[in-house]
Amino acid sequence: RPGAQEWVPAGADVGQLREAAAGCRGCELWEPATQVVFSAGSPTARLALVGEQPGDQEDRRGIPFVGPAGRLLQRAVEEAGVDRADVYVTNAVKHFRFTQKAPGQRRIHASPDVGHVGACRPWLAAELAAVDPDVIVCLGATAAKALLPKDFRVTKDRGQVLRLSTSRGEKTFLGTIHPSAVLRVPDDDRQGAYDGLVADLRTAVAALG
Ligand code: URA
Ligand code: SF4
Image 1 (tube, rainbow, N blue to C red):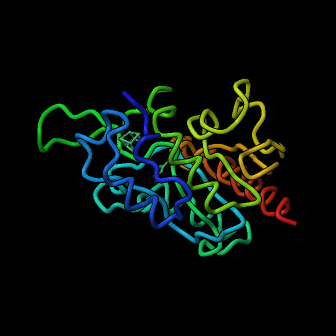
Image 2 (cartoon, rainbow, N blue to C red):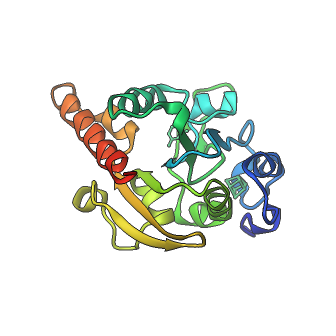
């Protein structure tokens, strides 16, 4: 597992990074996946949203957040007062990790481990340097692992505005729950979990100034 660094072109814009990522062999996740899923949205956005990894539908279509979690996220983003066109959306890990009993059977999401997050991090660092957003929202523990301090815990620290130094200077970060986690909450509590996500996104929008 060499990590993605050797495949990441220096000083590239988002389009060039996307093209180069198709050839990445920085970890073993590229092989069973259909294709790399790089990012979507505006390459000049002031707000960036970072998810975990593409899901089944994202893997098939090559676009992040187009499945059930993506639809929920889009709704939450709009409710928080942002046009999705003004947002840059990406994932901590760019290939779909899954388990499958036999070819043709359902592919079951498997969370990336810290090694995959570390291997893929050069893409995330490069795209955030290229886009240079003012506020970066980490959706769930995997994105938080990629970008936030080691002791950050979603349950305890979500919704807090953090100022962290990056290659482009100090930036605002905020961690919150992942939209897939909202979908897993039992029926009678799901609205509350969704409202919590919207509230955290509103905090991120307010931090844009
Ligand atoms: N979940 C994610 O974290 N990212 C996607 O692109 C889709 C689902
Ligand atoms: Fe490269 Fe990331 Fe895909 Fe691994 S998951 S092959 S590091 S793009």
